[in-house]
Image (cartoon, helix red, strand yellow):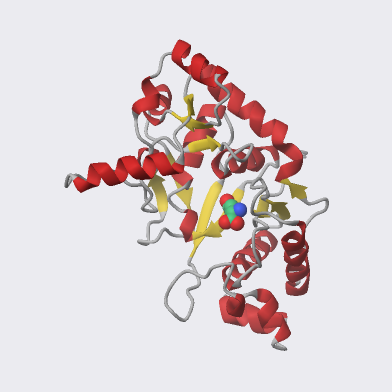
Length: 295
Ligand code: GLU
């Protein structure tokens, strides 16, 4: 008799409590639920609240209310990232020891000025897949002694991944298995291009971690096997694969779904009250109406 019990697949919906959920989140939550059900999997809910300036308990409460109304059935207790900051610090510490991160002191304003001055001379500053300017290269080459001096000055700083060093350490092309699709229909085995993001931030000056670092730490810790989320995070997956490899974490399967666009053809935003789940609910519609509208 075969007594090996295989573990059920684990899915998660991971909203950030910095606004109300919109119809795109409803699609994500329902897809996670449906896909988990279809394979006898578990569904977790994770509150991604590492940004103290933008996350509020009120938004978290509204998220839980909207999801309950939607009929989402998630396991308790809910994991809240702000309860686990020590874990992200520990992961960052490992990367510091490996020598693939460096303290970054340039402020947003300083970077903006550098980029503007550069582009006024008719040159093009490299940008990431979301159009943001890549972090300037200067501090990457600082010696450990220089870094120590700057850290000792007590000036606010972030920690950034030295992308070139990290890629050299990994030494191979990374990929992921995509069962949904990217913005251009990419599916199947996807070659990851983390370099397109430059020296990504892993711990912010004003927050104890970053989205990229905490998401890979938590997905691994919670045993997530299937990441189902919007196509806006398709390209970020390249960074997640690199961090997973550096930190020796398992690789989930990824499924990116289409984004729901507003009447203006743009991505829905959390500040647009008309396209929120709560607005849908107060307009007298049912969860079934919403399911029909998004799926
Ligand atoms: N917290 C992220 C958001 O609300 C989603 C993270 C993820 O699914 O990987 O956009």
